[in-house]
Image 1: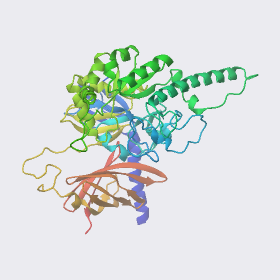
Image 2: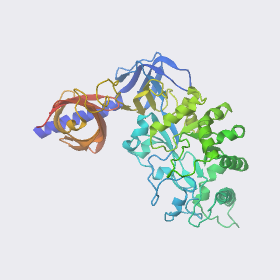
Image 3: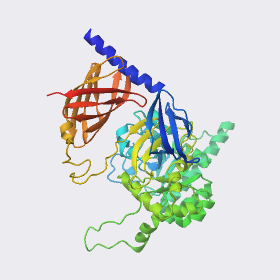
Image 4: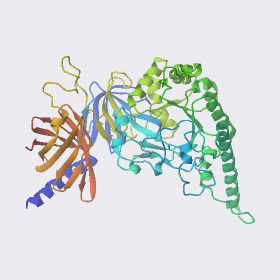
Length: 554
């Protein structure tokens, strides 16, 4: 009977969490709402249901079943969009270090891919990023916590880095994360190296032109053969050429990774010669060709990975030359110059390893004349427009995907605090740091604070009770802490769930887990605190919550 009771209790909590997630909504109330696509709502509400924005406005009715987030003093923005990223993409076999010019050489080290192509590895646009993209919330956590909810994902190597996808940065299934795939074709001014053609940038330029000519010819041969095959030799299949049909037909944008003025001029020449729907990515020196870029209506995905000075390896090392110094000084001014010329821009992180550098460099661009409104649009709706997903995301509008970032302070201000990030309707709540107080060691999260236990003291095994409506379910929570992170398990009568994304701040903690039940999995987010040996907190879904409490075992 006891086991039966436990099973029924656990079933009750799963049913409560799972079913309420479908029935309930989330409402952010009393907040300032910057829609980007329209006027700013000074005080209003956003209602979210089933991953979509159900309503937004100053006089929105909050549903009775809503989980309410009080937005007093907060501002709601669209989630930020990184328009060129390799997040979720596995490192290529044999690759050592990063790419950059000549980075396509890594492709030559890989064994030939299986498939139908008459072109060498590195010159194969049929590669699909979606085929190798990896899901899992933890790998996206740092950029998501900064407010980036969506990214355009590309391959890492080759002259053609393949077809990109647009994905939301949350989820444990790739199929649920993808917004659009393929989203664009992608090309870099690299070489294959290893003695293979093309081994020079002039060769790369020539190889690209030849591929496009070959694709045009192949498409025409296939058209004629399909119309009347009699007397015509059957056309030979080639996946590399077929992948370029949407590009040569103007149905898909092709993104050129181009930073120097020479690369940008070559890109514009190619776009004009083949009537391509071209996009420039990187664009450090795009401002030098701003008038022509505007004339040809080519958007620029401005990299926020600005050129940096290199530390000399020895005191006698040569300093940076004048052209390098000039590029470093002029690049932060580029975004403002492009906008002033009427060029559509969006932003990309340039795969910066420290997401804080993204906002630091964006601050430099704003200091150099880019308006905050133009910066916000470039980081949201413009990126969505360039990749054809602006009817789905990029602004705070009814019917769009609920990709939002909620901040205390302006979204790009140095003193901003991100309080909530919402991706596909899933709420990621951030813990706000208390203001630093004098005489307390290393600050609000440092050691030596009176009344605050160290991270290590939260470790242990806790007997807890989960208060399901109408029932109480016993469980065990195991915390193994390492600094400000921890691992462990949530153990119930139905099985063990591994702790994911365990974080400790002072005497508070948070983690996520996947709870198995009846052949399905329920995602939960847990927040709590420890005072002495007492523990308490809440088990959350996107829409509902149940409390728990207990004590540490001796």
